[in-house]
Amino acid sequence: MIFQAIVIPYSLWTLAATFVVRHQRKIGRRYFLLLAVSHLAILFVTLFPNATYPLANLAGVGRGADFVLYFAIIILLRVLFYLYNKNRLIETQLTKIVRHLALQDKRD
Amino acid sequence: MKVVDLDKWFASRYTQDMEVFIVIAAYNEAEVIGQVVDELLRHYPHVVVVDDGSTDRTRELLRDTQVMLISHLVNRGQGAALETGLQVALEQGAEIVVTFDADGQHNVEDIQKLIQPILDGTAEVVFGSRFLHLDSRIPLLRRILLKGGTWLTRFLTGLSVTDTHHGLRAFSRKAAASIHFELDRMGHASEVFEIIARERLRYVEVPARVIYTPYSLKKGQSPFDALKILARLFERSWFR
Image (cartoon, rainbow over all chains, first blue to last red; front, side):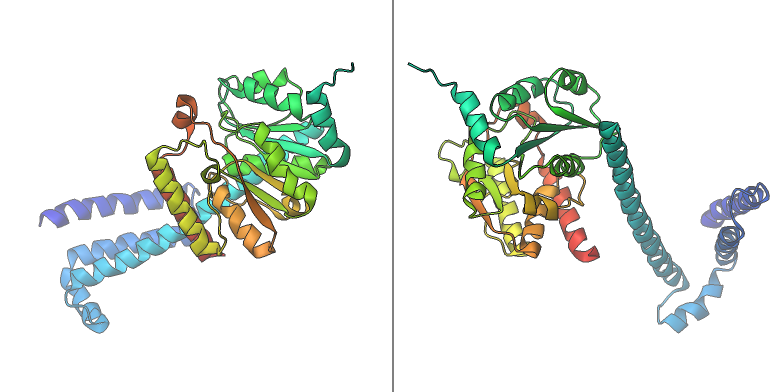
């Protein structure tokens, strides 16, 4: 009950914020859809926790909550990996820019 | 009796036949950079200093010297600064490039020993090694970390060296042109060994002292930095 009391209002709030941000054209359509579906999925699973059991059984995982947890970890790791790579690329590009400016300054 | 100015004779001997460029990466070294470059300029006319976004008076102090000063707008790391310095040295016609630390840990007299194998044509890369120098007094923790670095370098590259993190290194023009540091921070010291193994460059080690002062120990790498370098090296080998 406590978990639902915290997660449901929070999910509704973030869902509303997603709509607002989309209305302000601060995010693209695809990203808006991804966020909206994610928040709705969180809401659904929180309101109807038993709904995850068929999925859990299909995946060979015991409980619905475990299935959600494992799935979330996989997604988070993937996102973390993506962000790490992106950061590496940005750092490399930043160095190239700084070097280019330094050498140009020297040549001038 | 004619008095010979040994300093000028020394400098002219090596610049007549080969253009030797000294490359220094400096970050917040206002305390010692003046002494370091003064000493170098007495023996070597071509000194390139890359100021890596210093926030102290390093850049200001260097402007009053005869060095070729290149300034990074923001701090990018020693590896990035050395790569910039290498490019400048090659553009200026360097035939031998020597990397030299800005914190006063290196001995100018060791440069002579370092470049000799390149002048003789017996090596393309020469590393200094504090473990080959009898007078080196290395703090225990640092010795353990350096030995670990040596083992790791052997494991990753197959190269047999005694000191993998000595900043005093000399490269022939051919070697300098094939080296491009991709690791911006301190990982370049280990990265160079991968490049040597890949390009099959001839290398040798010579004894070269590292002078540990309270200042240089304060600015040096911590054990945590060693872990970060390790992580970057493994990451490079995974993501290549």
